[in-house]
Length: 375
Image (cartoon, rainbow, N blue to C red; front, side, top):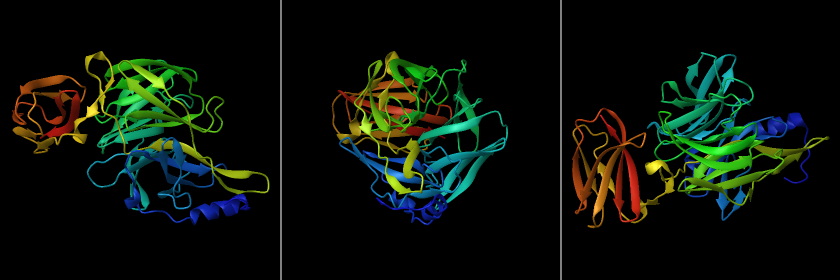
C-alpha cells in the first residue's frame, strides 16, 4: 500500500471495512504466532497472524486480519481451550469492571466480569485449559498474576515489591507461568511458577525491558517482542533459550512494521501491542532447575486413556526398553513412580483426589508428558 494517502478518519473507515478471516484460519504449527495490531493513529485494532521462517518474520495476510477488535482498549491476546472450541481471549476494563472477552465466531463476547475494581489487567497468555492474566494495582507496573478458570479469576501470585515489573507472561505445556522481573525497566531474572503460584525456579538474565509488549513460547524457545520506541531493541523479537538453570538471550529478529497509509502530517504504520501462540514448551523443572526435554511423541506413540479417569488409567507406547513412569501433580511433585519392561501399564488412581495430573514416560533420553483428569 505504498503511497496510499488518506486522512485519519478515512483510515478508521478503511480498517473497519477490511475483510477478516474465519477462525478456521488459525495455524498452530512451528513458527506461527498471533498479535494484536493497531495503527499508529490508534484508529482500529485487529488480530494478525505472523510467521517466523528461519528468522524472517512476515505478516502473510496483512489486509485480511484474523478478527477485528472493535474496542481499542483490548490490549491483551491469549489462546486457550476450555473444550468449547472457542480459543481466542482478550480483555478490557470499563470503570471498575474487568471483563474477560472470548471470540465466539466473529463476535467478542464477555466470558466473565469482575467488579471488585482492585486491579487492572494488562496482558494475557494461555495454553490448553490454562489461561492467565497479569495485572496491576498501579498504572505503572503489573504486580499480579491471575488464573482464569472459565468461571472465576483467581490470584495465584502477587508482587511484594511494587517496583518489580512482570513484563509479560508465557505458559509451558504443564501450565507453568514464565515471567521476567527486575528493578525499574531493568530485568534481572526469569521466574517460573506453578499453576497454583508456587515458585519453581528463578534464572539470572539481564536486559532493558523498556517498551517490551509481549512474549510467548514457540518450538521450546521463549520470545519477547519490543516496540518501535525501545531504545535498545526497536521493533525486535528476542529469542531466549532455556537450559539447566539458565536462560540465554539470542540474536534479535526484525519485527514487521508495515506502512498502512498516511495522513497529511504523518505516516500510518501497524503497531503490535501483544502476542500469543498455540505453541508451548516441554520444560523439565524437576531437581531445582530447568532443562529442555525431548518430546517422545516425535518418536514413540504414547497413549493414555480413559480421560477423565475414575479408577484406572491405561498407558501404552512403542518399544520394549526399560521405561520410567511418573505421576505428578500440577506443581511438579512426584506422587507415584514405576519401572516397566513392557510397553504398557495399568495404574490404579481411585485413591487420587479429583483434579488435574501429569503422567511422564521416560525411555532413555526421550521424555514425554501428558495431562489427565481424575474425576
